[in-house]
Length: 439
Ligand code: MN
Figure 1: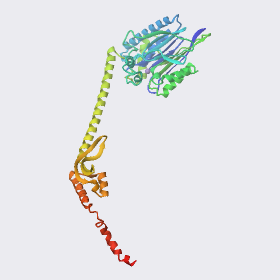
Figure 2 (figure 1 turned 45 degrees about the vertical axis):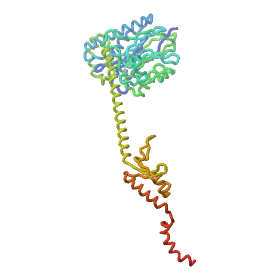
Figure 3 (figure 1 turned 90 degrees about the horizontal axis):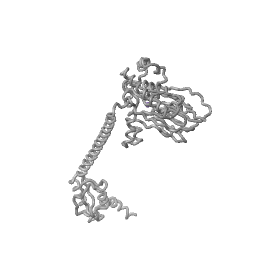
């Protein structure tokens, strides 16, 4: 019994981009995704050229190593085609594409990968990312400078360190051979999926009983529900064992599926590019482009450092302003308290205090200014309460006036004969007096 594949491919422009720069392919043994890019040039041209060249190697192989070699050759050829096209059309300078592909040979798969599209294997309920992103942020993660979590929101997360394009004549492609077995589900996708749909949801879709066609539609729908800021391209390949090997109709999706497919001679291909550019060029995405040299990495790291230094400086300046404002407020407040006086008690004696009664934490905002000879106990009850509650004064003279009045109150209390106060009451009593004897 031989292993067979059943597969599906889908590509969607997404909700924000005006054109689809992704391309995808699902054939007899070859499955691939390419995500094109270019500042002012055509990412759609780049991914279409790469997939169109690569799909020529779809077919049967004697061994996975043969397939791996075919992949490598086709990718080097695709890279050369991109360079030639840019040479003929300098306005396309800077275009490039990611490429992630697998060729299934018996119980093995040969994998080739460059860029930030991804290959995952779903086996026994577990999703494993097989490829490593060739991105600037992945380098930062690998070198321990940022966490994987920080990478997800890093402003430079789309910057690629390695792509196919016109820069390097020998592209640095990751190649490997792995085993595969019945029940395996392989997923190849562009970052338009993984940037929006998390691994748990991808796992859930792959774990379902859905056919490859249903899985790719479900995942595209999830990406669209998540806003789909980028083109989304997904290829799903199921491995199963079967007696009957039925022929597979190869499927090309995305920009490589357009009638402007670059088949035939280079002359013919080149002649059609300007038309493609005219009606398909969308707004460029300056954050998604390929690095021009190794210096570029240093430049980006330096830029990142500058940004974090600026953030730190701005933060410190802000903190300084707040601290100064608080200090000024506290100082002005304290100055004001030192213009105030009040009268209260200390050790049973009436005293004048300098400051205000309140405390700030353990700090008292007043001190005893002068202790008088007046005993609080000698004061009339109502006055005693006033003193224990303290009596505010605007100045030291005002405080002394209060003390003076308190002193007068004391002088009258030693003779608290009922005479002075009952005296006014005596008048009505006297008025009533004549009546009393009558009664
Ligand atoms: Mn993309």
